[in-house]
Image 1 (tube, rainbow, N blue to C red):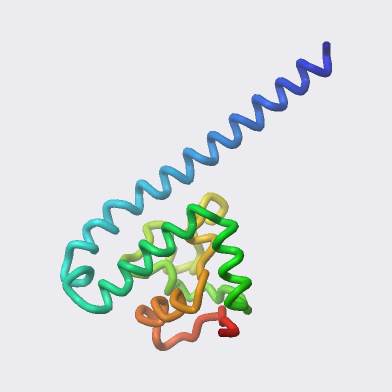
Image 2 (spheres, rainbow, N blue to C red):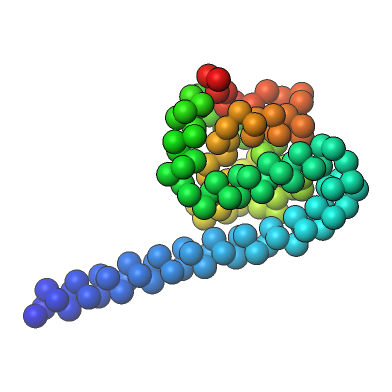
Length: 145
């Protein structure tokens, strides 16, 4: 009986931890939504070719991030190599992420960042989108194909 109480207690703690983490991630996404909508319907968004490219890329990455296994398979298919150099370009696609700290070059919600950030870049197209923002600094990630 004591074991059952202990395991029930453990399950409740795990459940609470999972719900808390989900709510934190939801809060992160909700904080990003208003600037995304503002820029989307501006001259820098739908009003120019680069903006439309970035909007399509952000929508594509957001959709792919709903299926983490698919993102990993795409990364393997395209042969992702390298690592992040903390240049901040991916945090400035279309708009500056409110969690990006320009002085420290770190994400303020790194442990609870959205999956779309965790998985970036998924395909070579993401590097092309990133290069629209920072042409002067090469990305630390590369792809075979």
